Amino acid sequence: MEELLRQLTTLVQGLVDDMSVLKQDMQTVKQKLGQLEQRVDKLEQRMDKQEEELRWLKEQMKENTEMIKVIRDNQLEQRSIQDGMRHEIASLRGEMAGIREQMATKEDISLIHQRLDYQLGRIARVEEEMHLLKKVD
Image 1 (spheres, rainbow, N blue to C red):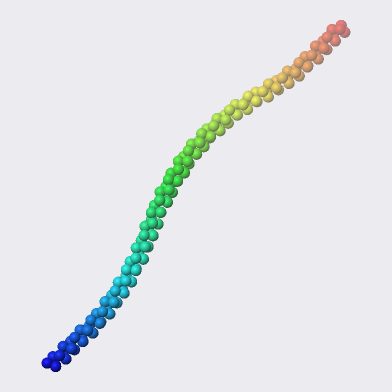
Image 2: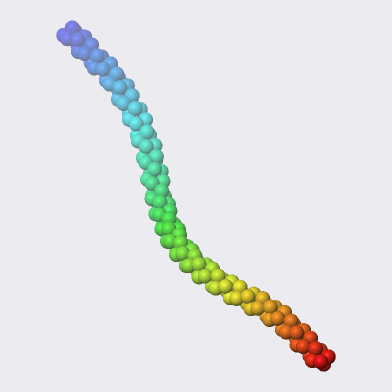
């Protein structure tokens, strides 16, 4: 019986040792599990930050798209205004060409008046000479 008691004691001692090792293993597992939980928490925080950044980027992209649309519409409007201005400038150039033609006609008239004045001066001299010749006769 003593032998049996010793065997039993040895078995119990082996079980106690096994339990101690098991306890240590469990604590190691708990530590690793705690570390894993911390890492998961950090990952969740990073994911939350990335989701927030993604929301911000989506909002910014939406605003940028709206601004681009407004700029494009403004550009189309500016092109239309420029086209209108080009047509107006072409029209003004045509009017200016007509005015220049009229001005050239006025210059021609001025030259004609000068010629007329010259011719009238000659006629007046000839008449005066004729008048003088008639008096002499």
